[in-house]
Length: 422
Image 1 (cartoon, rainbow, N blue to C red):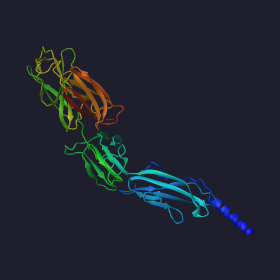
Image 2 (cartoon, rainbow, N blue to C red):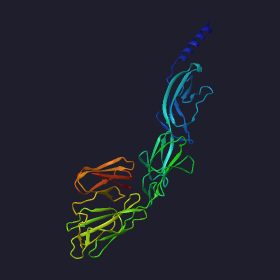
Image 3 (cartoon, one colour):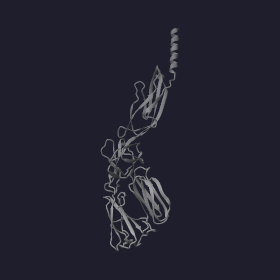
Image 4 (tube, helix red, strand yellow):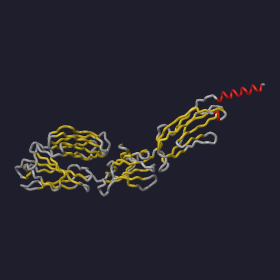
């Protein structure tokens, strides 16, 4: 009788313990919900070191975990195990982790906690300039970053890269267009490869990420470019002649010159007239050299513009020293202007003055854009009378790089390039 009573009590205790619910805890520590995993393992796979936390089992209890993944269920019950290292392809993954606990026998275990997470696995790509890593600038997805920065992408996702003309050390590096013999290019180097494959000759390029791009490098090859130096100008001509301007210099990449002409009738120099492009020698047919008795001072200077649109400073100034007369062949001192726009200095830091002229009354619009064509600032949008105007553009809050400014008035449109070099 006593044995039966003891057996009954033991059985009841077992049943009670078997149905006790213990509140345990389990959660992922790597990866976590929403995390992007991007550890480089191979050209096509990303390594994941799976870790998680679980609460300590109570006395008299056994404990095990279950992991539900994209390719199956894993458990460390008995001789089973949950792998620590995983080698995954890019994609979106949803995994669930469960904690099971119970007294004495595995068949009596209950699920006491669980967590489900979604995480993202992506390729790692390095984007850099060929001439430097770590201290020069480059555009990654339309944002200025340091050369050598990484971007994490899925297969088929677009990666936008952009080259920035800039000083590095004593050299100026520029993107040379495909029309030039020594053109710039983007190259793709696969993981552990010393040679690259050309993928584009465009300054700004949208690259579609490939299956084997994990650990790849996208490299921009800018070229050392000699910016135009200040040219020189001289004036010649005898009595009865029109003054002839001869100018030269500016360096090996000069594409053309811009001649600035200013006239003074004892009341101060008026608004300048520009000849763009100008060829040397240039004869000013509106001015006649007379010697003593002349009433006009004509003043001239010139700047060089290179094959990429960069401009030099204006040259020294030469004048007729009051020994000339106005002939009024095709220019007027006050009322006649040509359409034109230019800025000085260029390159600049942080501000530059944009000078523009209009020939007839019209609604003038002048807008600044970045290298990707996005509007930065609208400088002018109003009706203007014929004349010459100056407006200051401040780039203090902008990053270094190429910007464009465009003027539209009546049927005239012009766009020029300028470089903010901080």
